[in-house]
Image 1 (spheres, rainbow, N blue to C red):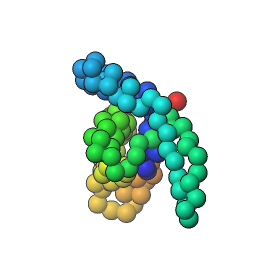
Image 2 (cartoon, rainbow, N blue to C red):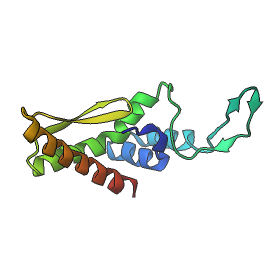
Image 3 (tube, rainbow, N blue to C red):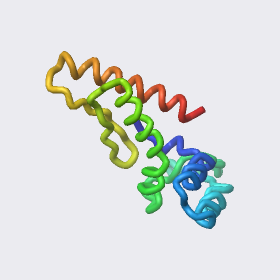
Length: 130
C-alpha cells in the first residue's frame, strides 16, 4: 500500500489538530499546502504547471514525519479492529508502505489470518478516504 500520492491536505491539518499540535503549526501547514503546483519535463519538453491539491513530494524533509502522522489513525484503527477479530496480526509500516504480518506459526492458520487482515485494511482505506 502506498499512501503519499493521495495525501489530502485538509485531512492532514485535521489530524495535526486532533493530535494536539499548536494552532500556529496547523495554520502554517494549512497555508503551506495552498496553491501548490507541479511541472513535468520529458525529453527536453517542459509541460505546463498543474495544480496539486493532494500528495506530497517524495524526498521532502517533511515527508516522513507528516506521512507517519497522516497514516497513524489508520494504523490505530487497524490494530483495534484486528484485536476485536482476535487476529494475531500487526502492521509493519515503513515510510510510505504498510504490510500486514501474521504471527501465526503454520500456513493453515496464517493464510486465513492474513486474508482477514487485508480485508480490514481495505475496509479502513475506503472508510478513511470518504
